[in-house]
Structure formats: C-alpha cells, structure tokens
Length: 416
Image (tube, rainbow, N blue to C red; front, side):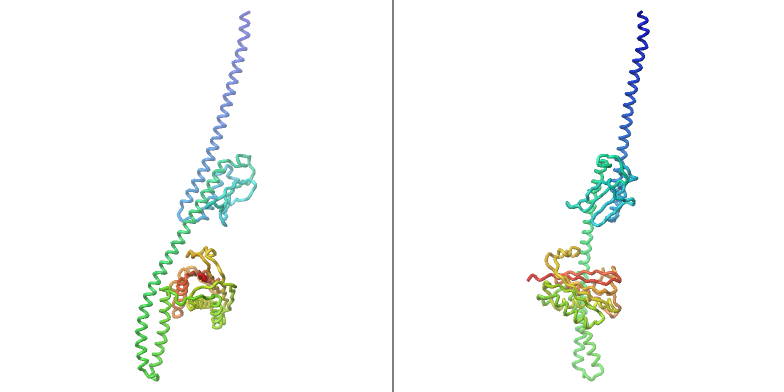
C-alpha cells in the first residue's frame, strides 16, 4: 500500500516542481523584459541627450566663427534646433529678435508648439519657438519632453547674451569710428591752420608790393589794370585763408540771439532770385526756439549748402527747407552723443544726383572736392562742419546715388 502511495505522489511532485520551474522562468522572462525595456528607454533617453548636446555644441561652434553677424547666428541656431528634438522629421523652428525673423525652410505654425522668451536687461526682446507639424503622443509638456523645454530655455538665454555682446561690439565700433574721425579732423584743422598762415604771409607780401606799385603808377599806364586785377585776386585769396582759419580754429565771433526761421527765409529768398532754375519749398516750424550764434557764419553755412544743392541739380530741381524744435532724445542715432537739452533742426534737402558712400566718408575733409579743376576748392563743406561744431552743433548727411541729398543741422537752442 505504501508503495502504491509513493507511486502516486511521485508524478504529483514532478508536476509541482515543473509548475514552480515554469513560474520561475516566467518571472525571469518578465524581469528580463523589464530590463530590456529599461535598457531601451535609457538608450532612447541617452540618444535624446546626445542630440541636445550636439545642438549646444553646434551653437558654440557657430559663435566661435570670426566676424559672424547677428543674423547669421540667429539663422544658424534655428537650423540646429530640429535635429535636437524627439521627432526631427516633423520639427520646425522660428526665432524673432526685434524686427528680425528667421525660420527653418519647412516652417509652419501649428497648435503643437513650445516657446521661450529671449531677454536682455530685464526686457523681452524676442522669442524662440519650436513647432511640430503633426500630432504626437502627450508627454511632459504637450508632445514635448521636459528636457526639450530646458534646452529651449537655455538657447533663449544664450541668445540674450549674444545680443548683449553684439550690442557692446557695435557701440565699441561706433566710439572707435567717432574717435578716429575726431582725431582726423583735428589733424586736418592743424594742417589747414598752418597752410592758412603761410599762404596769408605770401599774399601780404604780394599785396604790399602791388599796393606800392599802384601808388606810383599812372592810371593810364598799360600795367595799371593788371595790377588792380592782381589786387582783386589777392582779395579772393584772402577770403580763402579766412575760410581755412575758420576751419582750423573753429571759433565764432559776434554771438547774439537769432531766429533761424528768419535767416532761412532771407537767405533762401535771395538765393532763389539768383537761381531761378531751383524751386524752393519751405516748411518752417511755428514757435521755433531761438539760437545763440554769429549771424554771418550761420548765413555762410546756409549759402554753402544752397550752392552745393544747386550744383547737384544742373538741370533744375527742388530744394526743400524745413525747421523744427527737437531735444537730444530725438537724436539717438547721432554718433557724436549730443549734450542734453533743446535743439533747433534745419533740414536742407535737394533732388539732385546724390552722393555715393565713399564720397560721404570724406565730404567734410578740407581740399576734398568732386568738382572739376578750377570750379571749387573743397573748403565749402569743411568750413560748414567747422562752423557748426564751433557753435556746439552737429551736422549729418544722408544721401544715395541718384536719390538726392539731405543735410541735417542741429544747433543748441538759446537758454534765454
């Protein structure tokens, strides 16, 4: 009986052992599947992190390029973003910074998007946006990963620093250009002063001898008229030295309170009578502030600019004269960094042939002229520059070839 019981129990034990073994194998397979799934997840996450690091590395390499412009940086960053996202084949991006906008070639706005602000000095100056072109499963933030949000914020923060650096570089360039120009004009002024003194001494020697000869000569003498011509030419040369000295010294003489509207009216009416081929248009502000200046010198400035405008319109044209009250805050783009206060602005604009960029860079240099030999000394605009500076003012030129020229003169308003 006992042997029979043992015979029955043996299969049962084997079945139990087999079931236990199956359960162990199932548990082992489950653990293996879990491990494989975890491994796949970690591999996938690692791949995402590698893409993000490649994006940041690409941006760093982009910023290392010498003389790269802000626009090139922004476009480069936009192009580097899609490969760093989970679904690069349906990812597009856009960056906007002030009035500049850059996008990927496949850009399209959709409802699936992620945005990060670009800030500078505590202000929002732009935005960085990523879009999916198709719907994807919900993740940490819509269809996007939390790591993608962190990456976008990091890129946005970095672009803010890039903008700050570029602004500093631009400001440095402007200051360097301003300093170089001031040094050049100072050197030219010194040169002009030395030439003026030497030239004036030569003229005085000629004039003294000519005057003696005129005193002793009979008016009927055949050389008398030639001597008077020499004396007259010396007078013209004297005016030239006066212009040179005015440029070199930058001094003003009889300072008094003046109404610029009145000067513009009077000088332009007289000029219009002399140049019938030029149509003059006036837009003079009511209640224009007065200035403290030498009337003769300001008139000389206006006349020089009128003449230059007329020369630029050999076959007739229009001359526009405009005045207005402004403050230093309205002169933000002026490289000279104007002093705080009120200013009077006079704009003299013509419809002439215009000036190319290369000429504008030298337009206020003494002795530089685009006119033919015998038709100009190149001192007109140089003296205009010197006289405006002597009065504490500023002058700007805006012109394009074939589109006319505009001179803007800023003079400090009288405090009285």
